[in-house]
Length: 217
Image (cartoon, rainbow, N blue to C red):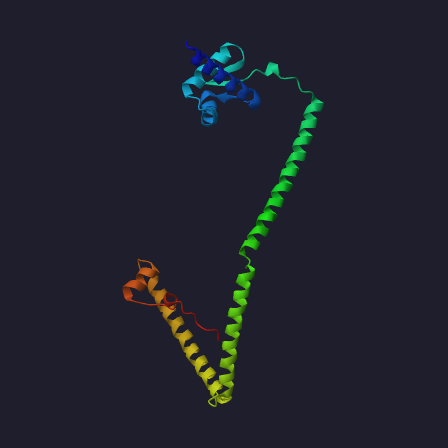
């Protein structure tokens, strides 16, 4: 074997051994390859062969799960952890979890504040908006002035007459719509198709087709 190949194999062995020890959890060769390929550029064949060699040398453990080999760090190399140490670690986990939740909550608050600030108008935009509103108010003032100066105002009697006619026509509209609805519902009881298909075949157009709403009484 050439010197370059030996160095490459040693480098791969060091990378894989360090990875399994740091992670301290079981992995298949495919898992190891997928996790390290992008960072270290290791080929799958190199990963498989190196893991097998490390297991044969007793540096890592190998176990069969069905047809798949699983590799993990030799647990004998790690110090035994007492119950007190485990309780201490559990306490740290609880504290860190609370800290993470607090930070996540702070992030949500800051994101909401950022969103609110991003949607707010800038000073130049506000100045422009004020000018446009002033211009709009001036236009309304001019219209109001012309209306007050006009002589053809609607009298209270004329206004009342318009309201009465409106109520009359709305009442008739409501009555005819109810009659049409009752009639179509009666037909649809024995009609084999949907209400929409029936309306299309007969040529019925509804208020909803034109976004028209019956005024309140």
